[in-house]
Length: 133
Ligand code: TYD
Image 1: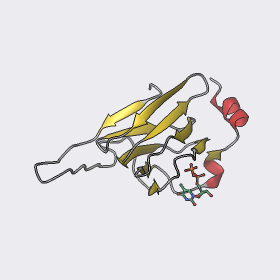
Image 2: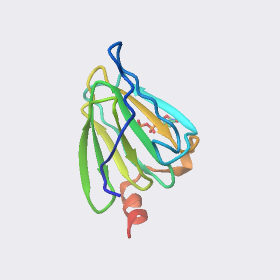
Image 3: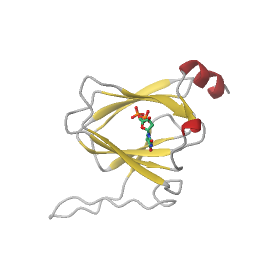
Image 4: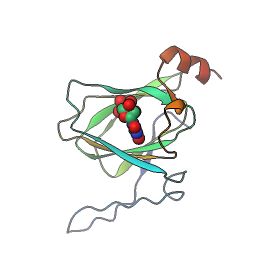
């Protein structure tokens, strides 16, 4: 799987407005156990700076924009998220950083597992050791 994996989400919008519907195990390759959203992040703040041992996530920018930096320990790439019609799949063992939040940015995150602090890798050197092929 490439580092930046954008999924086209089903666009059910019509002349009344937008509507996107996402079904677990159909449009995304996992069952969703947790949903959270990040909003009102200050423009000069960057977030993330961690990887997960097992957790997989789909990140959708439902409003505004931000930059996601992805790093699998071998290569690094970034993508601007600015549409509710695409989701960024983040596999396990990917270091992620979020930058350049617009004032109206809302990031909706669908996660494959319940919150578990022991699944986080918050130290970059530790991440590099775990991500080694
Ligand atoms: P964190 O994942 O570090 O935020 P970000 O990646 O956006 O910088 O989460 C911030 C805090 O919230 C941290 O103490 C863990 C806690 N948290 C939960 O309790 N449950 C959750 O589902 C999430 C995502 C975070």
